[in-house]
Image (cartoon, rainbow, N blue to C red; front, side, top):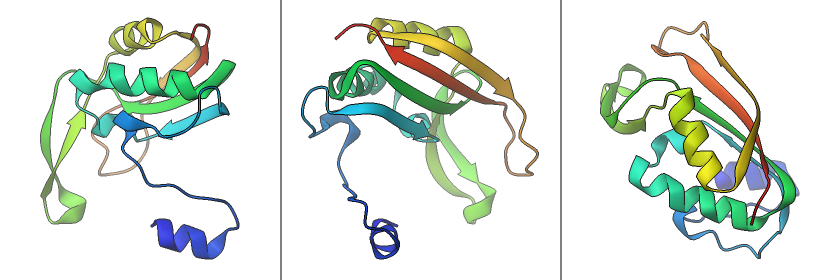
Length: 133
């Protein structure tokens, strides 16, 4: 996917582990994590969010999109011949608490059902602002 993106854009693309973000402190004005953090084990999420906080400027914005629910583990995805992949599900109160501990303030959130056959859960969108380093 990165090679395809590079062939279509003059933007710079990086591949790295979210638990070891390699950018300088306060490097970004905003971070977009649509359908990204649901693949991070819950025990590792505070480290990931602390890393995102570190690379965001004070007042910087973070958008995350997650699947609503409880628990985590391997699921079979019918779209890919029932291949197993990891998913973490969050309640709003749960993810809000994790974000606040990582130095973010939730500005707005939305929980909605998307009209696609494969999506069996509600989707949660959250916009948060970095308030503390």
